[in-house]
Length: 493
Picture 1: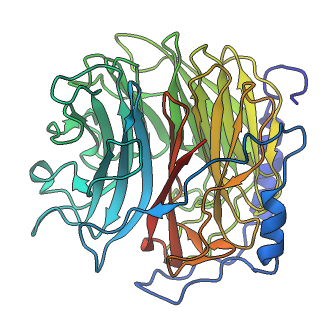
Picture 2: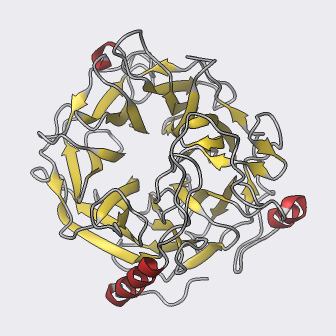
C-alpha cells in the first residue's frame, strides 16, 4: 500500500550522489564490436532454471491483491516474416485497439530487411498488421509508406493510436501512425480512414530540424489534437497539431538542462493535459551518445494551447536511477537497459506512472508505480516487482475506473520473459505476475526458462473497451542487436 501522499522528494542531492557513484563504477566491460552473426549469447547464468521459474509464477509482491483467475491469456504466437522470410527480423512493435470496435486490433512492427520495393526503399520498414476478430487472427504484414518513402533509408520507432470517430469506409476510427523516416526528415505522421487499407501521404513536423529521434505519439479522443515528443539531442522537443494532424506548430523545446531526454510513453487526460514519461540521460564522457551514466526518471505535463505545443511545461522528477546494467550483445548501446517509465490515465483522470529504478550502479532495477489524481501530488513509490532486472514497463488503463494493466520484461529465471499484472484500485495493490512468454520452444532462442534476449528496448500494450489486454513484444537470440528475432503477441485479462 502507498505511504502518505505527497510530492516526490527533491532529487538534487540524489543526483549528485548517484552521478558520483556511477562515475566510479563505469569501468565495466563494453559490448563487443558489432558483427553480422555470432553464436547466441549466454546473457545470464541459468542456475535458477525451472525451479526458480515455478516459484516466480506464484509470487505475489508485498501488499498485492490476489490474482484474478490466474491470468487468462492465450499462448503467445509470433508475427512471422511475410515480407522477406529468409532475411527478415522483427523488433520494437506496438499495438492499438479501436476504442469503439474491440474486434479491430492493429499492430506496428519494425521489419529489418523488409523492403517495400527494389532500389531506394527503406531497408528497415514499419509494417502494419490488422485483426478484425479481436486478435484471434491477423492479416498479412503490409507497408505504411511505399512510394512516398522511396528516398528513405530506414524507418524505426513506430507509434500508433486510434481515434473514436467513425469513417464511412470501414465504420471504424481513424488510425494515427508516427515513426522515424531516418533522422531527417525525421518523425512523420500517417493516417488511415479505412482501417489500414490505404494511408495518407506523410506529414512532416520537423520545423526545419535535421535530427529527430525516439518519438512518442498522443492524440485526443477525437483525433483533433495530435502531440509528439521527440529527442533533438540535448533538446527535449514537443510538436502539436490541432487540425487532425494536417499541420503542426513549430517544435518547442521544453527542457533547460543538459540531459539527453528520451520519451517512453504518453497519455491524454480528460482535462486536456498531455503527459509524457521521460528518462534523462547523462554521458560520462561528456560528448553524447556514450550514455552509460545515471538516468533521471520523470514525467512531463503539457497544458493545452492553440499557439504552443506544450503550454506551461512542468517536469516532475521521480529520482535519478544509477547507471544501468551493461548490455553484452554485439552492437548494443550502453543505455539499452536504462531505467524508463510509462504513464496511463483512466476516464476519471486518475494517473498511474510505472517505472524501473535502481540505486546500485550497474545493478538490477526494481519496478515501481506511483499514482496521482491531479498530476501534481503523487503517492510514494509502490513496489510491483523486485525479481531480476525489470525493464521497459508498458501500462494502459482498462474500461473501468481504477483498472490498469502493466507489462514488463525481466530476467528472474536466468533468461528473459514478458510479465503482466493488473490493479483494480488505481494502482494501490497489484495482482500476481503472469508470464506472457509462456512457450518453452518454437524458436531457436526459446527455452523453458524464457528467451535469450529482448528484441528492442520497448514494446506495446493496449486494453480494449471490453477489458482484453493485447500485448506485443520482441524476442531474439542475442547474436547481435538487430538480429535475429521476431515479435510475439498474446491477449487476455
